[in-house]
Length: 316
Image (cartoon, rainbow, N blue to C red):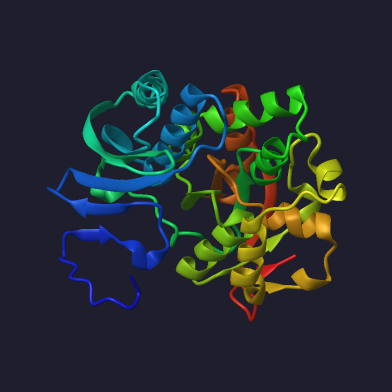
């Protein structure tokens, strides 16, 4: 997109140029439309869970902006020989996630492809004066993470038949868990910036916020929560292609990353599927927002702080 001469009107309040999770277009003084799209191939064997995970992941980008999803369109690539019952189960998983969000699927588009690919194009609404973006982080803000890290390593282990049943349960519970409640609590505490952790890994998404907000970020890597058997799987040699791509893309922004051990690097750059939120909040409000998140059954891990811009976007 950066190589294109994109036509943007005054009504476009947020576009891809600011590293945000969704676009925001002003409709009136009181209403703005929020738009996003996300889809991917199957990450688990269960078609219903695959559909639900894909939908929860797509809806998360609306919640990152502080918005309310209202409609969604299915995006579906289907092999010609795929049994109709699997198609129905995938769509049912997506539909249930959208219903849980208080929105409705109103149509979609399907094509024939060799491999299934499913996701959603989601539209939400928000007051244009209340949009939360990636460019709002302020020096002194605390950074709160709302889900543990580890879906990349766990999914690879699952595909290689190295994941135990209890680990699989932990993986699924994280990926199907909606960010709706965490977003609502974040908005009620007037967070300065918000994004979710997905394919770029923790450091990739933190780098995007630092870039957009013209600040730097200091992370306490010891405070980053991971899935129960994450460390053991890394030591067994489990890795992901996404980790390699993330390292190549973001290591120049991060002071001291090359000197860290493999476990620390994996933790910081593991690509997430349907990951948690990163909240950037006034340090005076950190205690209260963490308490409210935990009361609502959400995680709240304080992993770092926003500092003044310097040579590196991220300090570890």
